[in-house]
Amino acid sequence: MTRTARELLEGVTGKLAPDPHANRLLPLVARGAAQLGTLAALALEQRHVIAADHRAFVHLAERSAADPATAAFFEMLAKDEVTAGERLTAFAAAVGADEARAAEYEPLADCQAYPAYVALLALNGEPADMVLALGANVAAWGGYCETIAEALRRHYGFDDEVCGFFDFFAEPAPELESRALTAVQAGLDAERISMDDVLRHGRLLQAYEAKFWHALWELDQRVA
Image 1 (cartoon, rainbow, N blue to C red):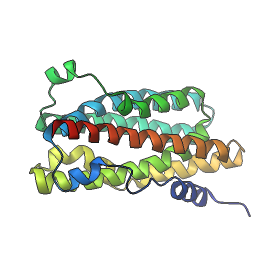
Image 2: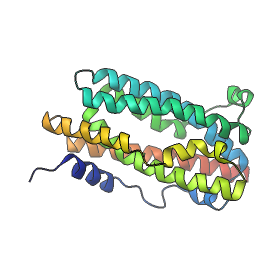
Image 3: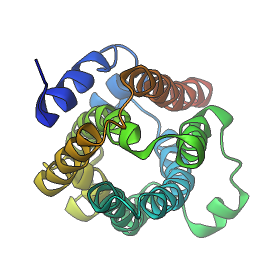
Image 4: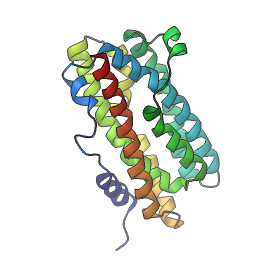
């Protein structure tokens, strides 16, 4: 039986859902136990992730010029990274990650493994496969952001402006979902999707995502 784009996207997201215990930092943040210095490192690492992902998504959109549906998906992801960067500013200031600290900060290799792999896929991956592989990670990331936004308000006393970066990703994104479904359908119609590649890319993306959080958890243990 032929699967619809929605069935395929939801199926891949389910298969690639991360282990609930993979993110060791999240429980610390959720109960207000993460160090402020760790939150600063989170902000500083995100500066690099956002810049790298923005360039990767712009490149994927350009590579997809002959496929308007797929290009539109990556164009929106690129636009969202710009918005995310703008919203990150208030959070970074609140946790002491100012420009001077940013200039001196040395990014953690495990935190930057994820955007490095996204960049590799942007150069070499099939864009239609990337839509599905990224979809699962976007879902997991959104859940993490929802938990963090709630904890920042409850335990750290931060206001809506400071939490805006995490709120942005935690909120439902119906337009992005619509573009993803349209892109997946276009990939199905053109027979460009390789499920083996989708799942391989997706598993690695989730593994690198876990490394990001684990590196920050290890940093928190050293600070504590």
